Image (cartoon, rainbow, N blue to C red; front, side, top):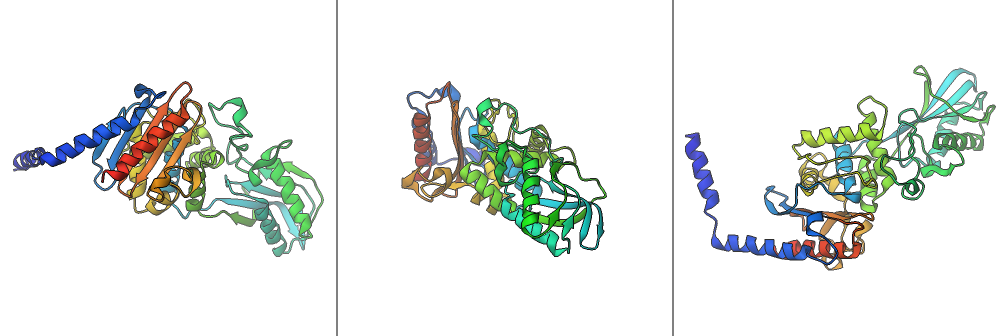
Length: 397
């Protein structure tokens, strides 16, 4: 009986109206033509279009070829973070006491310990200082220490060019305030410790010792906690504006979520596991960093489409994932892209000297990815082709 049903299903698939076949052929021809442009090699171009609801493949060109993804690398990072942590997840930064309390005096050190919050700011330090004062503490005899031990101490990511650190991204650390403003004169955790000491003094708390580095012992007393905005908001800012720093911090946080030290490599392993668990093809995929700045990163159009479709259909994260994408003619890195399709395309752009990419959702119905590589890539020509490709999808119905 199963064989008969299977045969019937195959036969039904083969009976396709001639108009549908003609329409599909016409769409393929239009999409093929849209990708042809001077200065972009067909062999170093990959593209795909997939029906969001059914998963049906509408178009593919080199869809399984590994391509340098530029900032579309942020899509699997954001997706994996939302899946693993949940959209309502909040980062925390703790104030821990090492020593003992005697009346209004803390005899010992206070440790500011970071857990990878990319949004941690001076205003948060002020609130933590207020919380310490609200505990009744007016004097600290020891030092104010900064603890970044949740992550490793590497400030950049593998594969980055020397000039990227400080220009394309602030320094990475589990404890970084105001995106490392003041670095490299001091390390991010030392800058944070100094700023927290100053915040305490402004709140009327005297501090006997200077700012310093240090790791909080396991028996340190929790005195105050700062929590970030929700991950859904962080992912939105990261993808819409293509923020490299946040992407790298999220990747390290994913690595630390396994109980290991938060490193870029550990985070990449987590993302790869999540991709495989979701059934997204990973052959040829190589995640070296989280932002896409590394020239050693590789993604396939097929994998990007899988991430997009999973993120946009998973009821746990689909709202947050969808809102993380920039809107054509309206927001983020797509503010000046596709003005004729204003509001009809949500996407993630990517640009380096060797890669120009665009991936997202058209008219709420079709997920797509277009990736161009070159040595260097002709960015203007590549973007023109990408916009043509998306326009064809939007206007053919």
